[in-house]
Amino acid sequence: MHSHRIQPRSLLRSLLFERPWWRVLVLFLSLFGTIFGLLAPYSQKHFTDALIQGESAKLWLLAAFVFLVLQQLFQQAVILVSNRESLFSQKALGDACFSRLLEGPNGLVGRAPAGVAVSLFAVDIPGAAALLDQSLLMASSMIFPLLLAPIALHSFYGIPWWASIGSISLLVLVNFILAERQSHYFMAFKTLAAERTGLVSEWVQNIRTLRILGWVESAEKRIFALRRRETENRKKMVTNGQVMNSIASSATFGLNLLAILLLLRIRRASGGDVNPTPGELLSLLWILGVFLARPLRQLPWMIVMTFDALSSLRRLEHALVIPVQRPALKEASGASADSGAPGPYALEVKGLSLDNDGKQLLSNIDLTLKKGALVAVVGEVGSGKSLLLQSLIGGTGARFQRFALGGEETKGPLDPRIRGKFAFVPQEGFTISATLRENVLFTYLDGKLPGANVDENLKASLLTCQFQPASERITHGLDSEIGEKGVNLSGGQRQRIGLARAHYSDREFVLLDDCLSAVDVDTERRLIERLISGAWKKQTRLIATHRLAILPLCDEVIFLNDGRVEIRGSYEELLILSPRFREFVRREDSGKRQEVPSL
Image 1: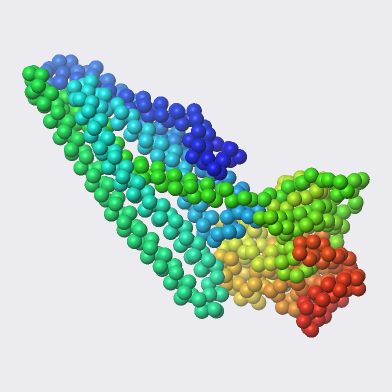
Image 2: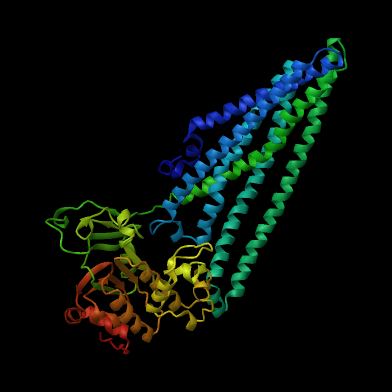
């Protein structure tokens, strides 16, 4: 199954019919396995009767053995093919969810807690694929025995159709009712578990803030209340499951008794020998126990798993229909189309636009960066600074009329040639739950030692970014463990680790999204001198910031207002030409104009 073929509104059809011949193969393998399985007790019947009568029974024994081996081979083939198809489906669903949920600003991650998205990947994708490796597997191993066993009972022993089919239909109906009820409990279980996972994740990530604000007790009460609802639902689910098991177990005894009574009645009515032969009893109980009783015991759980898988499909369909915008080049029109040879720019972007739910967030932005330039993007909160930087690396659904590197046209920020040229440092200072070394390398080493010079280069990057583990209460140096989302670090520490990561990666373009907002003034000055205007002086730098100390050092300042470029130029030019920019600077300074570093 290919991920691009997954249709959000028809996941069930995709799962069942995307690779139809493999699904048909499962049914045929199961059918032949059932036929060979029924021939085994038939051969055993003749073997037992012949053995008692003193006749030669070797051929019947050999036939029973061969049929049993063939049945097992076909059953194992069914399991192998079903599991293989399930893996294909899980990969396809995973690819579809990744592209639909994690890319673009409008996916599920932007509208729900991260725990909900985690639940989709960890619970609902395997749950939906269970239609193949569990429901289809169990259904194929039950449907044919339930259909062919009445034929065998009628052909071998004369037991009437109505008795077998009537008993089976009654048990199927009762099991279906109980299984449908059980599926509701399973659906509630998954929904509550996903909600609790989201709450716990949110609680862990914000525990420090919750403690400061005194909201820990309130948050924990909400989690405990949800856990109590889960427990009550689990009790009902277990009780209903026990009833299902009891009925299924009782059915075995009832079917055996009914079949023997019917056989005795048929023999008595025929006027022949009333007592069945040992071979007849053995094969009869074999057919009842293996081909009727066992499928009927499994039936309610097969129905439950099917309903459960369908509920996972519904949850996935609901998530996958969320609209997601992807970065793309749009058609150039009129005067905005590129004409003539491109300028000598390291990066040239024309007509960058972004809208969300009908609201224009960025409008027709042109951006040209010369190699080694330092350009600042400033503006009020919500003016689009972060969105602009994220759009350049494919983090939004922005559209472009032109996206060129060094004058060479590309397909936009998702072009494979683009991403490896950009380093990005977000405002929040992203960290992973790993060692300090792995956070700067941005890879999991899994206990492996890096190359000989790696640690020295890592320490140099950290030092350049004003992060010295010994003075930062990082007791084990590069081996120090960083908790999830840097819970034990300050915002400034997380930002400096992010800067060190960008410095170590040594990319051609560096995008800085207000990444000095959490550091003190002295640290900011050193970072500007030694990193942004020092170690990175050959890199092309674009920084979104509210801190004004760096603006006089920039080659260009872009002032955004409501998603549009209101004015651009040097810092001094903007102060002279734009009253709105002067007012913005006055408010940001708030009477505390920082000293401009002299380089």
